[in-house]
Length: 289
Image (spheres, rainbow, N blue to C red):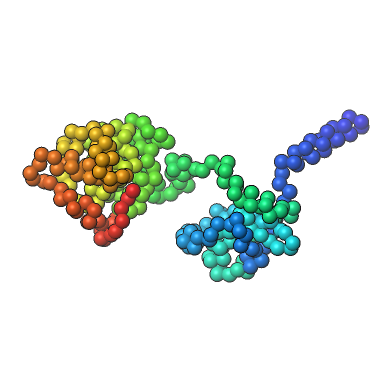
């Protein structure tokens, strides 16, 4: 009997010690109209972000709103955009949201939590997001991955031979220009530099996508591989840096290499930034960076 009492006491003490690592909060469903988020430390509300998130609303992505209850008022210090997104999709500020409520915070403590809430949060890398989307059976990501693998390449977390780590750029090209353009970009780069790691950098991928989009069938793949292939990836990168920042400079450097010592099959330089077609075959403005 004494032994059982000692064990029970030890467990109780241990539980009390562990409770110091558990936030002193409780959860309630509170209508949005009863939440306030006008504190001075709050960032400005981005309606662009609210509208974009509302257009892609997923109930499973909704996190509890953090609330500090002071003087009977529910002050939101984490979740300002969340409540506006839900109000927009539900068409009502009567809609309740789950709130994690702190009853013992002062204003300065709220502001400190708000300022440092993301300080030690490790964001997902594009590669990690991409692979998770494949596990979620996302059609787009599976299509991109299958295309990459069809060229005996792999999507990788870092730069390696025959690997592509510029995952976000692959997605942007696919979204903006479509499958056929991305396919041609990979084919050109592989045929030119045979899988050298830096040939699949963000700027190189985007630069070639600009050429494919601007010139279409006017861009001869055999000429590209022969003429551009005479330059190393590093040489293209150096020339690009001397011209413009980012993929614009790479696109110009690639056109110069393509046109070098050629009287026929030259690509008109002015067409590079004036002629653009989207994945639906329509004229468009803007460029992939």
